[in-house]
Length: 191
Picture (cartoon, rainbow, N blue to C red):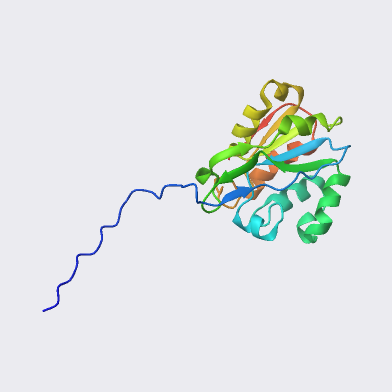
């Protein structure tokens, strides 16, 4: 009679990140000298990295939210046409994280991050007056990186446009994102 080896036990311990996990990198900033509003995300997700496009996941609400805030159908445009339209409206894009390790696309899985040099970018944008953080992770890391310089700008905490952040519906998210096109104080959203 053949001898059967017992099956290996399945561990309930999460997988550990190792130095061999891929190091992910953000995209270059999309800005112009006359950029007055900068939207900062955390780190592009897997779909965005694969497409080499900011907010490339088809269910990410970023392009509809910004488009509705501006009154422009950004979601209906090809990606290559969206960026010049954003710049023409004085809006720039970047991410607070330069490099990190992450399995999947969730911000909660980000490990070993190095932030982008936000202060250097701010020095190159003389007309910048508003910084919007797309989600809580971007805000936490970005505000730490800005330090005292955050007080020089109108800071808008935006609810995440990610499909993973489903706590708020589109209309509720849009109400916060409209703050990007209004003058005023801080607008706080969760995400």
